[in-house]
Length: 293
Image (cartoon, rainbow, N blue to C red; front, side, top):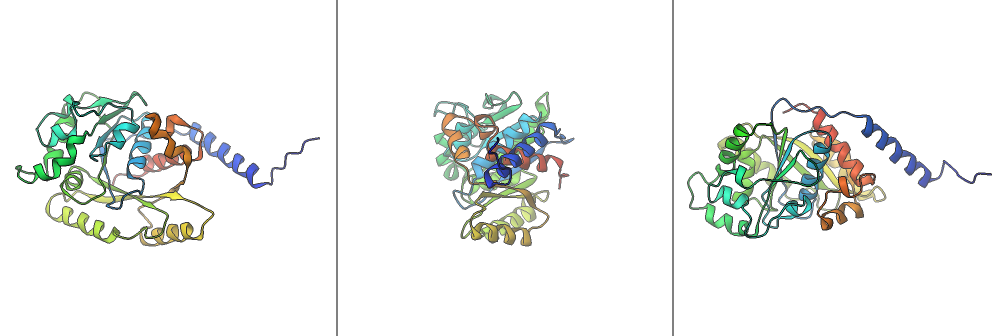
């Protein structure tokens, strides 16, 4: 006689994961007709910017898209998670924006997926904010280099994701000027919206003076814990303020997501059947199906 009870919370969770896994397996991701360039930004640290950048990029690459990740954070965590070399001697995004090196000389293919590439960050990027101050067209150096690179590659990139440092300095401004869309990860925790108005004001300034094509297109809620009232309150508040921009998918707080970078992997390849991996794949599917702003 079977003791399995399909009404228990665990059984319901397993059934839900199986349903989501099957739905993703049957789904086909559309690819855009022209390159979509996202800046992943939030001046608050620890909200999941790098994690979101890496896992969305990997999920879209898994779905057949060609994706470029530009690691603009001096910590180089996106480069680590994508398994690309970023020792001090490696040519990197620093050489591109400060030294005028072409992106084609610094870009590396990630071992994650054939269509996933990374422009790595090295420790040299830590001093780039100071060095950029005296350079000509200091806010537009990344855009210029990226436009040249995208114009010369044989196979079009469908997506470019720029991972920003947790600040609103010249590196982040370069990212805003180079992008067409802004993706803001917001953690489902106390003070989640603190500083967001300043970020939105900065985006408006960039739109007005440097990049009129820039638009806030996507907000992704991260580190969600359904057991807490606070997390649900944050979700409701963000969706109330940004109903069109906020993705339906929320990213759960997950040990597997946190573990993956230490193995030089995204959670998509580290544990593809985990709730965190399924959530990022669902978020990537939403982004792929949304029309360009």
